[in-house]
Image (cartoon, rainbow, N blue to C red; front, side, top):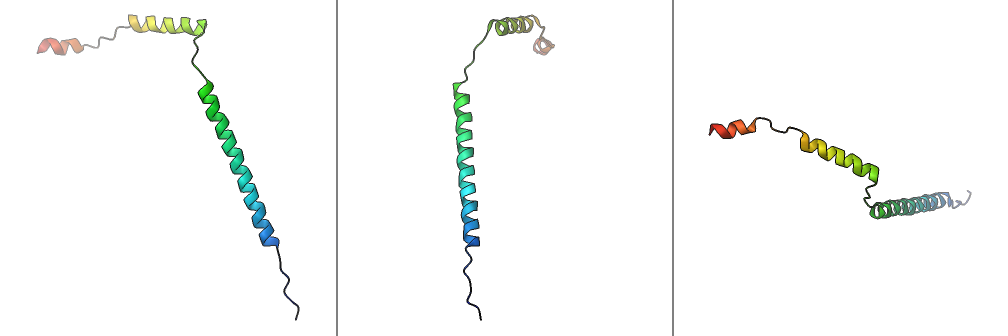
Length: 77
């Protein structure tokens, strides 16, 4: 009878898988950390072209007739 050989292949495979998972976790953690930092840095800034467009939209809102006949209900009571 031959003596049993110890095979470390399973142990080595398990260690490699654990290392890959740890490296992937650190990578995702750093990627999410950078995204979170970028969202905090962004601020609202209105440039003149945006400002003019917003003014135009505000004027349209002000001039739009939003009366849908609801005043008729008030006058019936």
